[in-house]
Image (cartoon, rainbow, N blue to C red; front, side, top):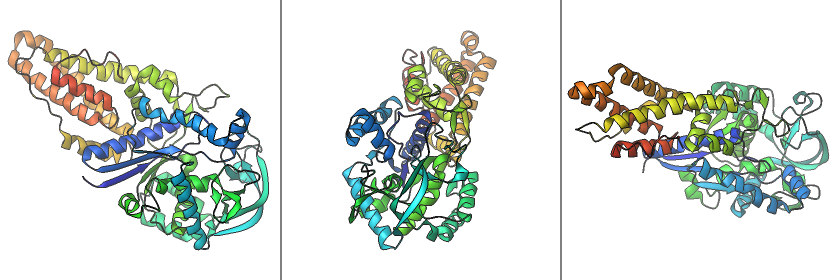
Length: 473
């Protein structure tokens, strides 16, 4: 095998159905995983669900279920994404898994031994939706802008705290030494400014009598870990830390994807925690932009939620993959709608790629000397790697669609259907080029649209159009 490549998504909260924001994140991770496998690398792709915390407990209570029963039911929606989005992950971790719980407790002990955990009484404004403390400057009209339908709660109790304030200098040194640590670059600059402004210690526990649904704090059964502390440990517990040190050392550090609302937690809090536990933390973090619908944040109450399952039902698996991966520019905010998706599907897939494949394969049936078509894997990797290095999947797809448009134009200019009647030598020459281009397109599409790539390959082998592109699925 080649190099080791570890990639992980964040873990979405389990209390809501999967949305297209997370679908995009896990698809981007899937593209990188597939691409590295095509290169011959040894890949470990991790995802899963975040299952502790106050809002999970409250929802379970509302439904008359235990918290674990509720999680066991909710997790099915996320597991089903593997099939309908054709995901290739190697590991699905739940923060209720026993191995993860043991690792989270061991991680706590490491930070405690460093002297970075202490107790104090505090009073704070808290957003249950974010499971985060909020300063007055972060609120709009007294509400969290991400969860305006939820009341801000006041928490006053004794908690354990993490000495985040100890890590300002070390974090800034980390960012300085690794200019590509956080991409896009504007997000690195954003986290630098946050850290430069000074760091305040943050709470990492909750009183068990008030919030029992969490990982118990080692040597203190009166407290459970704050959900963020517990959940972040999944990135290393998925690799067997600390019970399987040899396996962990083979894979860590890795590559991580996250939404921009998670920038502070992933690129600063988690990095400081890793330093405290004396774990190397030079993994690369890709930060996605915000996905809205018709200029608004997706919300069930607004009735504007687009689910990934809905996209698959309308456009097929690879159609949905293409639309999410190719709609915007990595790291930038995206404004989507079903109308925009439909327009792009028709223009790029039905009338672009689907039309090209159908035309070429149908005309190739008339060739007397049909060539053996083998895509140029080396060329494909070199071309696409330039884009995927910065997670510019939309640009990678744009590069492929430029080839598709040029091939369709080449057909229109050379009119092979006429050459087949008047000039068989020229007809074969034109078709040879088109078939090679199509084989190349298939190779390029493997990470982004794997089922489509395979269908094109099969069509090239058999010169049969029946299996292909009545609808791209």
